[in-house]
Image 1 (tube, helix red, strand yellow):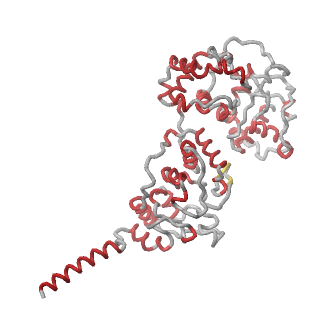
Image 2 (cartoon, one colour; image 1 turned 45 degrees about the vertical axis):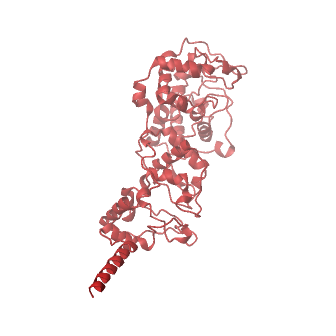
Image 3 (cartoon, one colour; image 1 turned 135 degrees about the horizontal axis):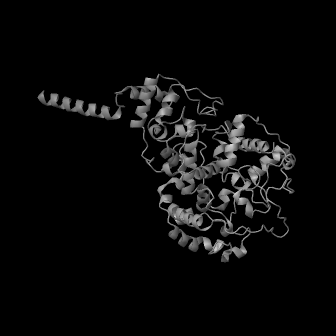
Length: 469
């Protein structure tokens, strides 16, 4: 009898131990109760990744690695738009499905549970440091996002309007919704998380992955803080002597030892390298010089033959070169403007200006400016003209008054447009100006401003019209 009691007691212990490991742990807090009791009726919280066609709703096994807490609370309390315009299971529904709403206390409890319990070990923390993410890098990321067809499934907003496909989740405010480490790891191999669900693997480099991940993190974040290297310690520590050595080793092969544009490599190049000796580089905005040297000519609307030196020289080396250039090249002696063969060297600020500019396509040439000349639009156009237009504010060539007499104009043939000349401006349509600003002007030094939003270009056109009144 004694042996039987002991035996029965041991069996009870073993069975209890088995049940404790085989059965889900009893919910001990509100978040866990809600997830296990309500959320799990649609969402998957454990096991292996599955195709969406086997699920009712997105898997949330990695929800803590994926979502920012503040956004999740807003979403669960009904303060965010549906993520899927066609429904998660688009094979069953083509209409957005509104998520169930809970009280704020419950939403916060669920979000806390996600943060504590639903973290995927594949998502490494602090993979990308976006405190050193620049506006230029974001523009590269946007280009990748569009060229690699991400925009075919994920909508973004441009000028306040939705653009792109709606097959998958909206990216209108992805920077407020997703965590950067999640985006980076997901972009590496999306089918890891949603196999056989139509997810696309893009062919991008490690650097490209940084660009597109950072770009996604800017979406919907109006106050995103871009890194500005020219305001960092590297520029305070810039050394002219070091910069001179770098200039000799790298820049002189094209621009010449004295900046005359006569380096040994210049013979074969068209267009020819810039003649730094005739340029007032001490007047050039330091951010513009940084972007030219670090990211290369093609990324600032200049010659694609100018390499991007940032990966070679590193940020400190770029700062050193710029310090040398600004200290050395200050415009030199003013010389008579000589036109290249086949061109006419007209005077700066001529009115009217005779020029055969390439005509915009018919459907664009005759467009009328869709914006009203309101005080707000004119002010924004003025700010773009004087300081904010990228890659270089218009005033540096066209002059602060728009009369075509900016400090860079002295070496330009043909000279920059004189926007104060009504005779010239009355002959140019809104659509023609829009097209030239966006695409640049062939056979002139007017570069493309293709990184500006359409609304910004139209605001510029409004302001340019005002200059001739």
